[in-house]
Image 1: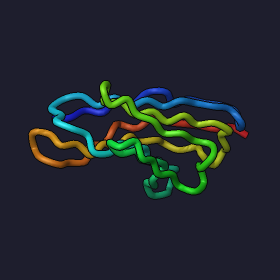
Image 2: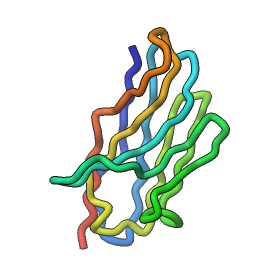
Image 3: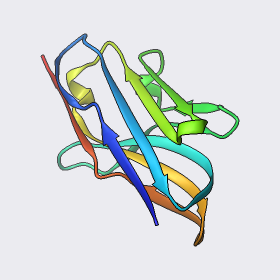
Image 4: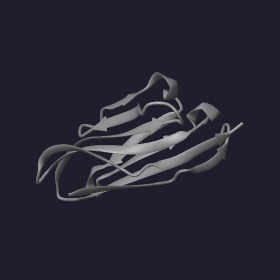
Length: 119
């Protein structure tokens, strides 16, 4: 079993910054990709950014230039630095990890952390 624990959400004014962290633990042989998704009220869960084992990253257009994803492979941890936050960034942010573990290749999700950006 693999657990993902997120931290770093909160309330911030527009233009401010937050840093999210997500640590994976458990029966992990390797992690292929880690990423962040978000879900606003009444909307589907959407991709924000991903990073693979080669540190190649991918972003949704709306956050390019403002958000930066990074990972510490030794700690099985992924980060999301969010700058120049906008009210439309308000959502629950979920960490995702594609893990090779005891059960083979599987996707795991964190419990979510709330990010609220006030105008």
